[in-house]
Each structure stands twice: as structure tokens, then as C-alpha cells.
Image (cartoon, rainbow, N blue to C red; front, side, top):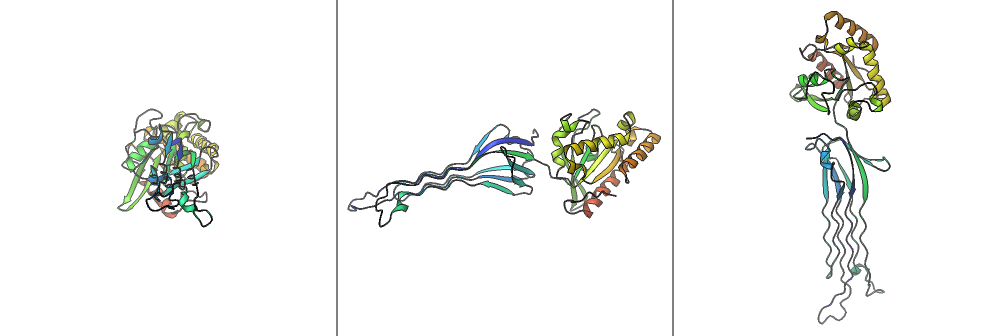
Length: 344
């Protein structure tokens, strides 16, 4: 299934049915009077968050979704049939905005959350306008129009921890070691083309969700590479795990330079995101010799200004330590963080 996390289309609730103008015609009843019924209400258009959906691909091609309109009223005081509601299932974590103004209409962050465009109310038939002063009303109400709007849907994955890093930093290998996720792993850049989610189980009934985000490159804030397209998926993450690959650092300007470059890209994309708590880790230490790894570790720890971890996802070195560090921090911060505190 193709991963689509952003889409725009037009939605409309149903129009209300028109009220009827009718008069009773019955043998031996010379003055039957008005008997026009009201129109039916228009159907509502409903967005509902569901875990049965994990992408917005279903909305990629159809550009208009319209609920059914109400039927007009009839004679003999018959009310028109109400229009059927239209239910659109979207993934949990979908935000809905007015495409024209950018106004946030709804943020569906839990299973069953709903956003509804109500249908138009049906018009009253001439029966409702009968009075002692108006015995034969020859008019009825038109139904109210439904609501039509162009919406922009944006999916932000719900994860507790987001894995960040340059291409080939070892993010996919790590998430495959700590969860049941099976992302593509290969020895070339941009192996990960879409975000991947993995559930890390600490013990029965105790778990957290990790998101593997496609690798960033320098200039991502201006649209270079792929990762900038998916940074929205770490907006909801409470903790970021920043992987700095030892082998790439050894060939480039060092681990500290890579660390600062990625944080600069985060800051240019979203200043608040750059201040999100980070767990910094020197990854792929198995790809360099011990002296180089030690030097990169010391350099990165000085740049980060706090204790960091060393990791080899391929060999399994440090995997348990990083999982424990994630879990420990999440336990200490049960709610969304409002500060910029960093994990130990």
C-alpha cells in the first residue's frame, strides 16, 4: 500500500429537502386545507479516526465527497426521507484544516474521534404555515443548503519516540532489533522512503511506540532530500533519538559536525522541534576501529553537553541500554513535555 500523508479535496454535507405545497383533496371534504409535508434533513459528512487506516491513500484520486441530500416533502403530510450520512475513515493522528485559510478544524488523535459537517435542515411544507388568518398558504420553505468546503488532511504519526539521523545512520536496523517492524535495510542512502512504526514491548502490558523517519541531509529545510517531507511525523513525539553514525563521521568532518548540522536543520524547520528532548547516540560503532570509535564518542559527548550512548544495532551492542534509556525517560515524563529537559 502506498504511504500518503497529505491530501486535499472538497467535502460537502447534504442539502435539506424542499417543503411541499399541497392541498388535501378528498371526496366529501370540500375544505381539506394544506397538507404539504416538510423536506428531509441532508446527510452529515463525518470524519472518524480509525486504526483500520494507516495512510490517506484512499483519498488520493476522488476529489469530491458529498453526503446525500434530503428528499422533498410530499402531499398528505408526508415528510421527505433524510439523506444518508457519509462516513470517511481516516488514520488516527489526522489533522483537518480549511484549505483556503489554513484554520485547524479538527485534530483526530484518538480512536473514534470525529469531525462532523452537519447537513442542511429540511424546509417546512405549507401545512406548517396554516393559521386562523392564513387558511390556504401557497408557499413552503426551501431546504437549507449543506456545508461545502475544501479541506487539507495531514497525517502525523502517533509515536512516543522518533528516530532521527542522516541517511545510513542505522535507524531502520535499530527499529528492526527493538520491535517487530520490518523496514527495508540496505547499504545505500535513502533506503527508508516512508516512516515506519514499531512497538517496543518492555514486558507484557508495558510498551511504547517508536517512529523511524527517513534520513535528513543538509539543506532539508529548503527541500533537499526526502526527510523534510516526513518531519511532521515527529511533531507528536515526546522524545527524539538522534543517531550519529561513526563511519560517516569518520569520513566527514567528525561526529560533532554531523550532530550540529542535523540540529540546525531541525531548528530551521521548526524551532520548537529543535528544543525537543533528545537522546544522543553514536551508532554503527562496529564499522570503525576501537580508537576511532572512542575518539568520535568523546567528541560527540562534548558537543552534546551530556551523557550519550554507543550503539551497534548489527551486533546488538548497546541495544538494551538505549531501550532502557527511552523507557526510563518516558516513565518520568508521562505527559507531553512543555520543557526542554534532556534525558540523562
